[in-house]
Image 1 (cartoon, rainbow, N blue to C red):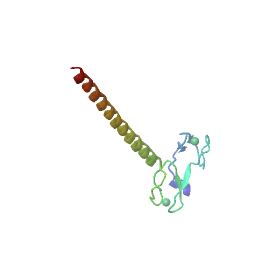
Image 2: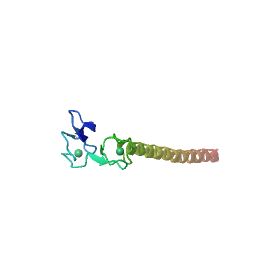
Image 3: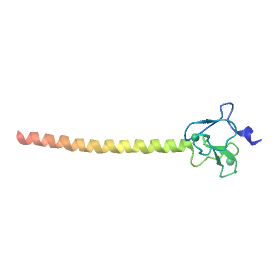
Image 4: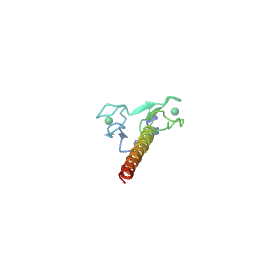
Length: 106
Ligand SMILES: [Zn+2]
Ligand SMILES: [Zn+2]
């Protein structure tokens, strides 16, 4: 009965870690042995790790695949802007020094 709630179709269950497609009703990945399901903290239902929400009660999983990606992207974009800001300051100092050197010579 529980298997009816799962999104597996004919393709099987996709492993979040190695992207291996696991046939049938396996609890862990055939290939890398990482678990394919997590337990919902709210209702205790078995939820596929590739899903970000519990299919039974709609509870949002804490460590969802998409949340992780979102956080990673946010952290990276923040780092890039910080790096660009630093580069801009260095460039400004460099230009200032160059202008100063040229004006001293004149
Ligand atoms: Zn795997
Ligand atoms: Zn649930």
